[in-house]
Amino acid sequence: MDLQKFFDRSSVEVARALIGSELTFAGAGGIIVETEAYEPDDPASHSFRGVTPRTRTMFGAPAHAYVYRSYGIHWCLNFVCRPGSAVLIRALQPTVGLQQMEIRRGKTDPLLLCSGPGRLCQALAISIEHDGLFLSQPPFTLTPPPISPIIDTGIRIGITKAVELPWRFGLHGSAHVSRKFA
DNA sequence: GAGCCGATTCACT
DNA sequence: GTGAATCGGCTCA
Image (cartoon, rainbow, N blue to C red; front, top):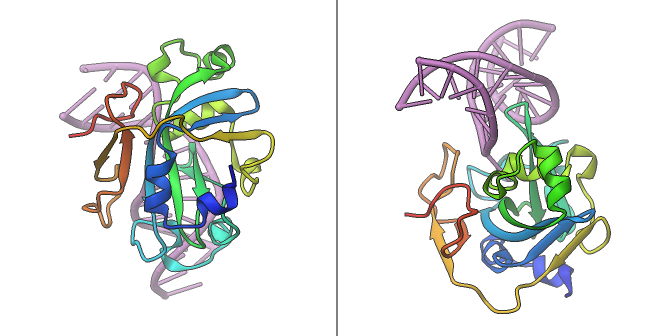
């Protein structure tokens, strides 16, 4: 897949298109079942106030990883689309490297391995040192879904601005989303 | 340079 | 359902 082209569109389109894709990182990962879109003119987006040292990656080339720390504790993984727009990866359905992820998470329940942005990064051992990596080369792999899945849409989670935008997407019927869709 | 606060998770009640 | 943990970036002075 031509990832440069795939990511060179609005984050809302990309967020939808990513549902059902398989993401792996250094031999662990799974099916992307939940994403959220963030746009440059979106008050909830880190890029809303322009380029800063933290958000520099978000304004770089498409198809790169943008990683940041949340609440001083967790890491969150995003995929950069057009400059200033990105897709937050919120949940995976684990498929490969289960044992590795169980050890890192200290849990064996597949619903607790990658269901949530912070959990996902802990399970895959992703942190700030992976900020800016290109998604089409190791340790990343990204494979599109074999068929286009049924997608649920909802409002985003955990934000205080632009809370009404329906920019959260999930794989219909998946038990692995971080929260159920209304 | 001080103070505020968040794209969260977990333990505990 | 509620609150603690924890820290870098942003805002304002």
